[in-house]
Image 1: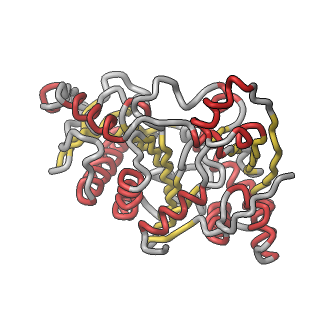
Image 2: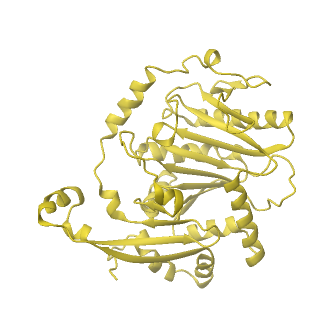
Image 3: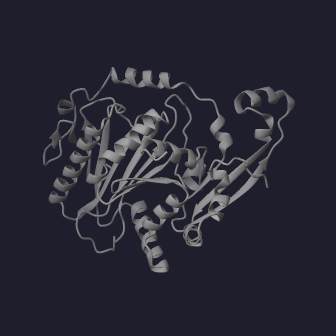
Length: 365
């Protein structure tokens, strides 16, 4: 099996990094994760060699490819990593920025009060946005937080805090109209690669009745099973594993992780006691996404415990913010296909590269 000779920590050297951990850290890693690797081989015909060199640097880099696989044994999530996939050519960021500017010249929400519906309990507003009912609902309580600043990438620390405030006020107000709707979810589909049907910046907010949304409920159950099996808090151990490998930083009470099993490119997790404490750290992560990693389109999901007492246990379940990069705006193909939908996540970016960007952004590098 081919081994990397680089001294820089990477997903390729993960097994070696784990082997150098303390026995307690190794035990914690091994009860949550499994890492393996394999080589894939192919032959490049002579007429194809010039194109391969132009696109991937060398024929040898394509003919022998190292695949690293990381599985989460607790949640059954897993990711296949192959750095060769990261060497594909991409358009320039300038063209992407121009595409957003051009799209906003026809901003359908230029005057949101006139062109969006209201919830029956009215609008909630502040200087950074307003709420509106979603005209095509996911659920019975499903609305949007429309940003005052139309460009979704022109966010500031204050605007993020203000928009989170609107979301929290909406959750509280909507729950007051239906006490059984106690399970909150916040999402941000930033631009069209992430599924955003409107370019103008906006969150979506929803409250589920009866039980949390399926994937969040599954995560709660997996964490509860882990606690029963190991007498330990799952999310605490996930953070400790990432920290021991240099994949985590902290900002106040917020813990920020470069995920070992990313759903898609450059996934970052934020663990926070409650959403209102997340604004500054979330802004710093988003700024790093935008300015350092040149991310233009992303998905954000905020997984939260119920607003009021539920029958099932939620002990140790933090507010979890998940962020993934959805790729270049000019791409015509989707970054998610049959593997991600039905089998296992496939990723080209290295979590250790993401972690180094986080460390620089948070003054740890």
